[in-house]
Length: 159
Image (tube, rainbow, N blue to C red):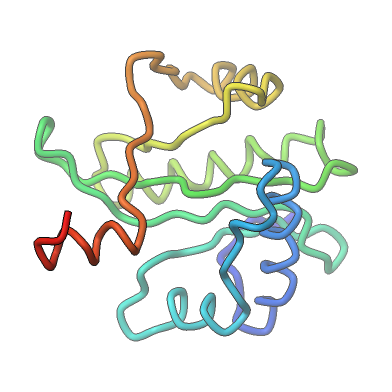
C-alpha cells in the first residue's frame, strides 16, 4: 500500500473515486468536477487543492483531497479535508488511517494548528473512525454555504 500525491495521469481514477464518494453521500448530482477541472485545480502553477491517493497493486483504492485554510482564533494555518474515501472492498485495511496519518504529517510540516472537515450524521462508521483517530466532533457547528448564485447576487447588491 502506497500513500502519495496523485499523478496527472491518474486523474481519471481520482475522478472515479469522487464519483463513488458522491454516490456514497447520496448526492451524485452535486458532483460537477471533471478530469479537466481537477487537472486545473490540482496541477496549476498555484494549486488550489491537493489529492493524496492510496495505491494497491497499481490501482487507486482511496483518496483524501485537501487544501490550506487559516484560523484567526489560533493564528495558525490549517488544512481542510474536503473528501476522504476508500472503496468499500478495501475498507477495514487501515487505508483511511494511513491517508489521515499522511495528512497529519503534511499538517505538521506546514506548522498547522488543526485539520477540519465535515462528516455526515448518517455516516456512523465514519464517525467512529474519526473518533478512533482522536478527532472531536462538534454538534454546535452547522454547515453554512453561499452557492455561486448567492455569491453573485450579494456581490452585486441584489440580495
